[in-house]
Length: 218
Image (cartoon, rainbow, N blue to C red; front, side, top):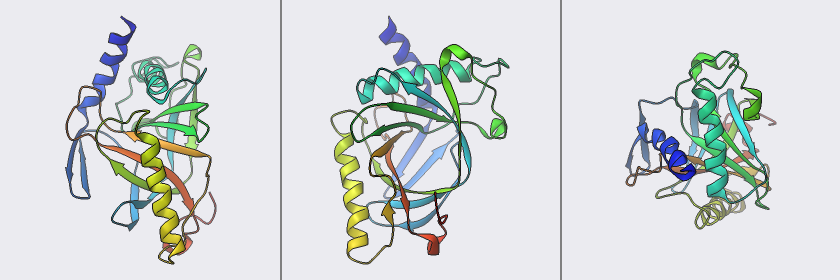
């Protein structure tokens, strides 16, 4: 029964309609954090994300990427459907982020707070154990991949993005460096019932690109 409930919750994310055409990604009818692409390579982008507010769920004890994402998302789902001190209903947003250190411990699942509540989101009910996070403007290296993001493929995608960023720096084509080598994020835009045209991303914070518009320190 619990598995069916979680599958139902994740199905709600299938309202995100993604169209992939080469490097072009269009997301319809759902709110996403604002960003500007400041560098576009064949296999990744550098994006400058604006200041934003997120709701986060620390998953303890840490298990797998798949199970931690489902557990964290369940709590975030409750929050946006009235599980807050105002009993407010918040709009669905994308992507859902799952962050973890390279050791695989302490998974954190995050959901972007819709623009209506960016300034002051309603506080979550205490039993949900959620935290409000205020993000400063920051530059993030982003690699896109398709299919289902899962324990058996995410680390390959993370490694590919790390290699791409490092290679551009070594050959002199970029001054960008990975800011935190111990933490990586997977962004998912689709529910579990969305079998085709799926959109996922690896996010890694980068620094050293002030000449291209990135903040001097993050």
